[in-house]
Amino acid sequence: MLTPATIERVVAGALEEDAPWGDATSEALIPVDASARAELVAREPGVFSGGEVFAAAFRLTDPRTSVELIVADGEPFAAGDVLAVVSGPARSVLTAERVGLNFAQRMSGIATITARYVAEVAQTGARIADTRKTTPGLRAFERHAVRSGGGRNHRNSLSDAVMAKDNHLAVLTQGGLSVTDALRSAIDTLPHTTHVEVEVDRLDQIEAVLAARIGTIMLDNFSLDDLRAGVAQVGGRAQVEASGGVSLETVRAIAETGVDIISVGALTHSARALDLGLDIRVDARGA
Image 1 (spheres, rainbow, N blue to C red):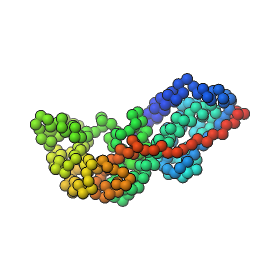
Image 2 (image 1 turned 90 degrees about the vertical axis):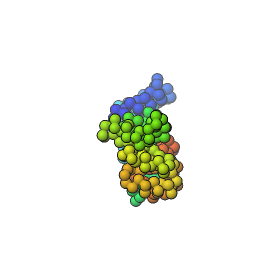
Image 3 (image 1 turned 135 degrees about the horizontal axis):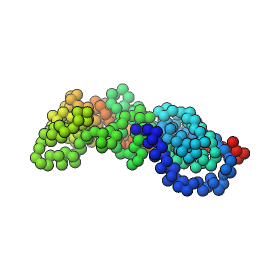
Image 4 (image 1 turned 90 degrees about the horizontal axis):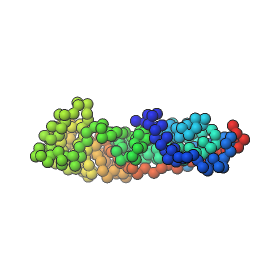
């Protein structure tokens, strides 16, 4: 998802938003021939993500600016560690600073919280996955950050897989068809490569859904006892995903019920930006 074209398109838009007619402050105060060297420094520990995005903010502002990435995406770091070094014309470095930091802080925050969830379910066999609860326009960046933290990605978009939730089933069965028959009729129209997932919110819905031969069943907002019962009832006939009520405090117990996947919207919709800073030294004598 995080292709060079995607990085360039999104970062260019962010730079245009932040400096539509240039950087008035830098142009007024910084000599045109001044050069700068800046270090991206961690103010707190975490897991890094967004190195290429950070670098693109400076490259697209001024191709004369270079960025050396010291820490790779997915690597942990400690407070005080230098994550990247930026060198180039001082005006350009100062102009790109905020956009580069915004992306690196956001993506590293997502990677860091994802890594904590992944650590909580270690040795259980459950996978931590994100959801579509991403910032509009930034899904590729945020989903890359989830992978940096050791998590997995759910379907990328509405176009990638069939995922029937309660509202879909309500409309699908309003003509009098059973859930099983309605799902089978719909599945028969799909290419054989299309994955189908169906959400249920009660144990008594499971058999009718499984009878349609779906690939994944989502147990939504189930209690721990009902999750265990649901996993036993499915009996390996489909992947089992748990969703709803997931936090760092509950995720281990959910994983121990035997589910295959735990989807966590909080990875992207509630992640705190990590505290990273750009420490700049300006040489007014020029390069």
